[in-house]
View 1 (cartoon, rainbow, N blue to C red):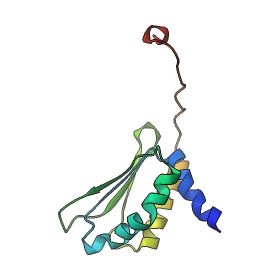
View 2: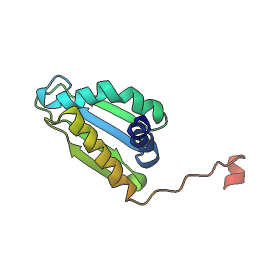
View 3: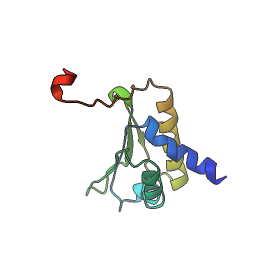
View 4: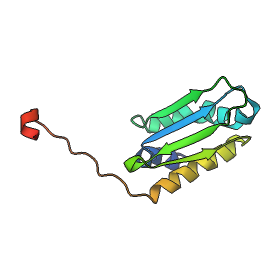
Amino acid sequence: TASTKMAWRAAMGTTIHEFRILLNPDAPQSAGMTAFINNQYNFIKALNPSMPFLIRESPDASYTPMMYARYAYGVEHEKDVSNMSEADVTKAVKTLLMEGTSLPSSPHMPVINGSPEDII
């Protein structure tokens, strides 16, 4: 259903603190990743506006397309998405999301009102 398709995308921002993609968008080994970006980026970003979703391009045609997810406490996992279809890239993103749910989460920082003297 539509809500199931949206659920994992909406959960990304609560589990993944930063999502990075590195690729050469013109290289054949990046075709699935490029399709994922073209078809999913706006939707994922709209559901997770505060989650950094970074895309970095390399001019090197032999560059291996990679995805990186940074979780709480600076823990990072990566996936090589070379020669994957868009559907396989989507599965890899879901895997990164699931891996993050098993990690300890950091407590949210409280909002502190007052001057620096009040905080110290």
